[in-house]
Length: 317
Image 1 (cartoon, rainbow, N blue to C red):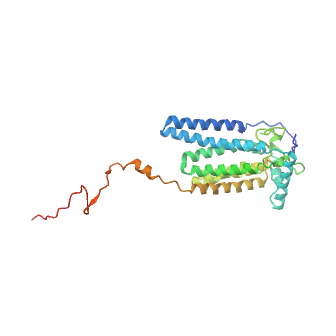
Image 2 (image 1 turned 90 degrees about the vertical axis):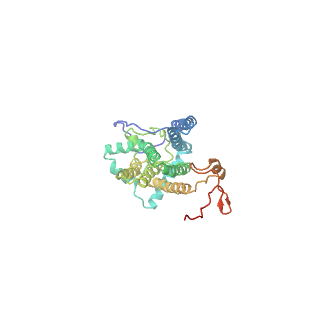
Image 3 (image 1 turned 135 degrees about the horizontal axis):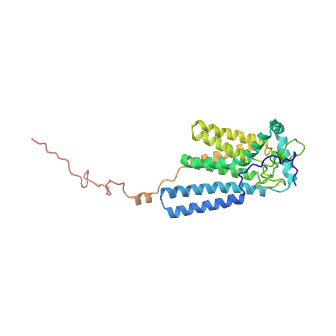
């Protein structure tokens, strides 16, 4: 069993979690992909069928990414001692960079159980639904921008998965530094008391929570001028705070995640700027003349097009 700092309490009410296992996410992804294929084949070129097919296909990609993220967490397990050693390295790098102490920030909230419980719920429940809601909004309202957002999400998540192949324990697993596993203390842990659960705990670096929340904030602010756009910024800020208060991530986990998100956005922008292929000549010929135009090109003979009436030169008396 992995040692966890802090006493465990179960006096609080266990709040519901909206986490999805990688197996469930994979099943949903396959189902949505199949739905997209069926809608495309049976619906033909109908507007509703086209929308359903496109929406199902894009949703399948998102659920597949989520399943890959969850699965990568389980594949990153080598040795708990190695993961903890890597986490201590992250801690020492932060001290060298003079970043604020996560232990200090967490200590500000520990005397307030209600705030801690809300932080646990926020961490466990809003990460995936908020991202899905954002993608649906972009797909429905700003379809022309959706490919860039989707590509940025895919590239950033893929880069995070590669880094997560190196196991790094979360701060709450480190003994002797003062971290408290707040979710385990109040019976709200999605991981369980044995150190294993819905998502593995040894993939703390980088924080996909932070990467996705910042993407939502950047995307909303870039795509709308509504005064409500600042709620997305608040969500990103709260996510950064919550992952620290619950001792699930270091500051550096979020910093690396944002850097990878920037890389994903650059790649997505480059892809978006690739010019679309021009229609081929054969396609243009097959399409025929435009409605209302003559299908034959006039041939000039003697300076006058065939079929064209000569100009009258006689002048009436």
